Length: 194
Image (cartoon, rainbow, N blue to C red):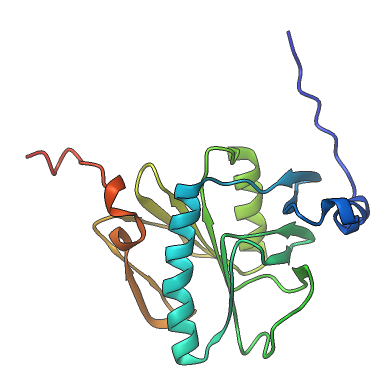
């Protein structure tokens, strides 16, 4: 029998590690006392970029705040996360932040699930995002779904046939969910086969 030993660390040890020059080319999150390397794949990255592009255009046109991509980190409930897309309003942060991890949690975090994401770390991240007042979009590429977790409101499920909105966070923003999934990856659902 083989046991995987998890080495927990303090936030100070994590901060010291990421400041070392030899670690500057990697992206790491601090989740539940563990350091986790941020790794994705091309398909998930493409989905994240599409979502980020739609949100960025809307935010820029309406001068609502700042949007970050998969290199923009945030301090979330004392931990360090790097969402695939993050949005923070101009009201909460009038000017861009230059820290590796913004000391404020985002208003909206988008996490595109890749094969390396574990259910444990995802559960921790969603819980901490919600505790910080962040709305979280969890994108499941294989299922072609987005699960939207709202602080104090529960979860809303969107499929590829739906249009997602962002409520008060991004008033009048809407996005057809099917538009974030590349055409060559469309899967036939049982209803489509009829």
